[in-house]
Length: 605
Image (cartoon, rainbow, N blue to C red):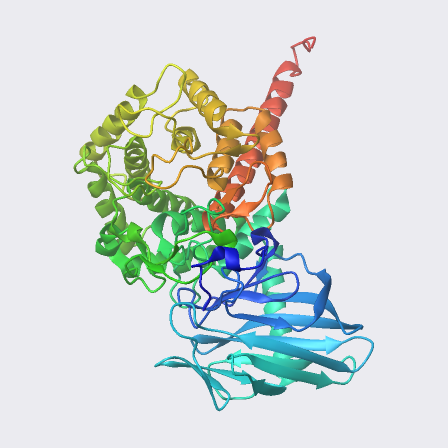
């Protein structure tokens, strides 16, 4: 492991750009690839397992790469089961085809290599482990990762160095694939079977993307969103992780690093809403099954769990890891598991409403969740909470009442659709009370504070328009959006709140990508033309794998990447732009029929 005790003693190091990566996943394990086909982040055997490859966070971290290779070309697919790269090694053009292959409930990371114009002779270096423990040792070609997991290198001719590096020589005739597999079993993969499995995985991935319902503008972004949601969904349990990474910094050199490799109710619900929009009911159904297994007690017990529905490990710091751009501490586990977040209740019920609009019926298990979450939203309205930004010290937050309103509003809509005979007077009363409290906090400039009776401005206010608490015909909606964006905008990007450090961490952070897309959605709902301009600017600025935050000057991706929530809000904004465009066309057609109907002379324009 590396040491950060004496930074001056180390040579200048430029970490790999966060935005340049591609995401590999088979729904059990995840890996990030650089353009050079270096695997610098790999969690195995599960998405939330400690990483075996982690040079993304430390120059001395575990990684898998081809020796002395330079880039020729890399595919543009941001996420999926496979990735293709063309390299130049010792004057020979080499194709690399990587994939995660499901094997039982586990997964194998398989690398196919072939040369184009000469016999294949490449070397592959693998150094893994040591992230939070002494580096494991190779024993007879196998690495003991844990008492239950052993990693085997299969294919080629491998030698093991004293530093723990496995150096594999891969050779073969020109044009023929050679396989290198990192797996949890001793069985050898037949190359022809691997090629067939890769082709099948790619065909399934393309078919899923091709049958999507896409917005008419920036359709590729909606496809990217679906690909990321699919990659971050556990294929066995249906849980959706917020991001496959931990401790990528929200500001380079700062202390805002957290572990997102868990299933947040908010992020998962937003993700399956996107799945429903683009036409993937299978992802929606798998996540609903995940929620039903949690049940109302599990959902109310914590706003985040692991992808099996179990508790998230306590948050702790991992020493002796350099950190991306020397950003420490490095954290695993997450303290949000102990928090109260009303917005999580609202987003879960919002997702259930979206699903029921298509299915028009609810199961008994779903109804028990609806009732329990709505009842919880009526309890203790003055109780301090941690809110949508997960502040470390509970406070009387305005965003808490926004979340309570959303939960109760969606619960009442679900009730009207599925149980119209039921009357929920308490839900209606508390929904009105939450709305009144929020609107009473609106200031003359239209903004809302973070805390009641507090100062500052909070971007979560945009949810009032995004979720429909304020309609486009209400002048308060326009004042709210204009006032919030006037204070928090940096170009098309939007900060969560002024980055002054009053949230308990060092001052300074970059604009928040989901909030930047809220601005697009809110402006579109208000019928504003600058909504499309903001969307165009964001799509031109942001990478294919959307990060958590983006530096407003360098346009550098920051924070855990890809962030499912960023992709969900991007897709929702693009679909809202489409919806508003259709409404305008329908209105124009209706007006045209009115002014030209028989017996009425056309009016002058």
